[in-house]
Image (cartoon, rainbow, N blue to C red; front, side, top):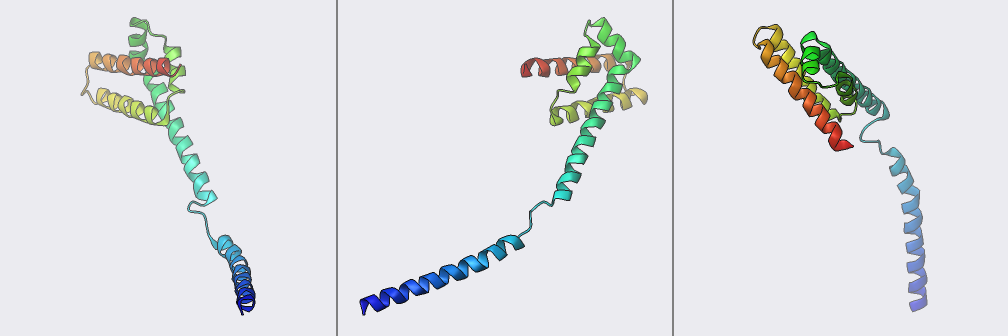
Length: 136
């Protein structure tokens, strides 16, 4: 009897394994990715576009006549600052671009004096230079 039970148990286990392997690949192939490739591509394109917009915002900010004069008077190399902007992380870039855009809007609306804008330009330039120095 024990050999009959063993062989029956072996056959039962073999059948279960065959059934498991026959069903499992179908379930695996039926699963979908959490993020589809097209969604991933759109997110990547959006992040890239956002980064380019932030770089353009800071470039416009540092290219303004007030910023150019402030950087020149402080003996800060504008080219170094502009080059450094491209090396910032996405988060750093977004924060500084937001601050620069807000400063430009407030200056254009008359809420900021020329002197205050100069201080903001210098502060953002120094932040960029410090971040670059820390990364090197």
